[in-house]
Image (cartoon, rainbow, N blue to C red; front, side, top):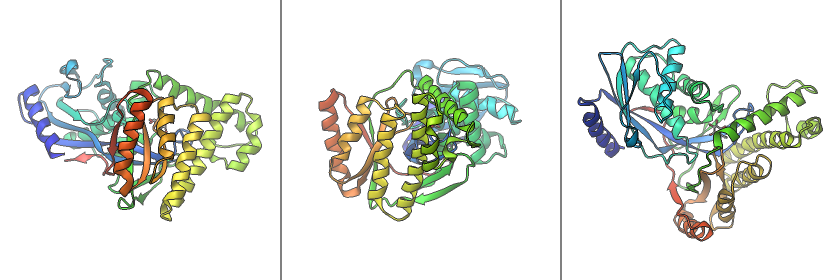
Length: 387
Ligand code: GLA
C-alpha cells in the first residue's frame, strides 16, 4: 500500500506540477455467494479485498477537473468543468458519473480538483474495478470538500452513477462491499433493506483464492441488463397470483407452487435461480456462523451449477475452473463470482492446501486452453477511506 502511495504521489506531481492534499483507497470485492440476487431483493455475501485503487487529489482555485490514471496512460489527462461533467467514453466516466450523482444530491463542488488514480485490480475480471473507482471518487469528494455523507451514501451514489451515467442497471452489492467492507469479515447484506451483518472469516482455517480466467465478455453489460429484465418479467407474472415486492421474497415451496404461472420458460429458470440462490446464501451464512466450511462449500458448488444451468451467465472457462477445483485436495467449494460471462472463480480452500491448489489449477488451465490463469490469495480488507 505504501509503495503504491509513494509511486502515485510521484505521478501526481509529474502530471499536475504540485503536491496532492490527500490520498484515499477503495478496495475491489469478491462475492462468496449470493449472485444475481441483489436486484431481486435477496441476500449477498461479499467481502472487500486487499486489491483496489488509490487516488491522490488536490483542490484547484478554478472550476476545472483534471483526471489521470496510471492504468490508462494512453488516455492522457482528461479535463472537464466541475459543474458539467460530460461523458467521454473512457475510464474517467465512472468518476464523472459520481460527481454528477453528488451534484444531483445537493453536494456541488465549490471548485475544481486534480485527481490521479492507480490500481492493481485486473480490469474486467469481475472484481468490481468500476465500483471501486466509483466508491473511491465518492470518498475523495467527501474528504476533499468536507461533504457530510456516510459510507453507505457513498455506495448508493456510486450505484446512481452506474445507472444514470454508465447505463448498467446494477444492484448495490459491489459499491456496498467496497465502501462498507471490514477486515477479516464477510458482509451478509440484505439488498432489499440494506441491513447487514459482519461474519468473521477464520483465515487460519481457510484461504479464499481467486482464479482469473482471463476471459472478458464484451456483451456482459447488455446480457446483465437482459437478465434483470427477465427477472422483472417473471416477477410481473408471479405478482398476478401473489403480491410480492421482489422474487427473493418467495420461499422455495412458494416458488415451486407458482412457477407454472410464468409463461416464458427462460424467465422461469432465471427466477428459480434467484429464489434458490437466496435460500442458499442464508444457508451458507448459517454454515459460516457454525464454522462448518464443508457445508458452506456445498452451497458454493450448487450456486455455480445454478448460475451455469438456470441463469446461464457462466462460460466454458469458468465451468472448467470450478469443476476442476471441486476435485482437488482441500477444496471446500468453488464457483464463478460476480456478474459472469468471464472473470474469476472464488475458491474456499483449506489453508495448508492453498499453495498446491494454485499450482495445480494453473497447470490444468494451461493444458485446457493454453492460457495463463492468475491466482490471488485474498486478504479481506476494510472499506474505502483516507490513507
Ligand atoms: C455485478 C453487479 C452486482 C451484482 C453482480 C451479480 O457485479 O454490479 O450488483 O448484481 O453482478 O451478483
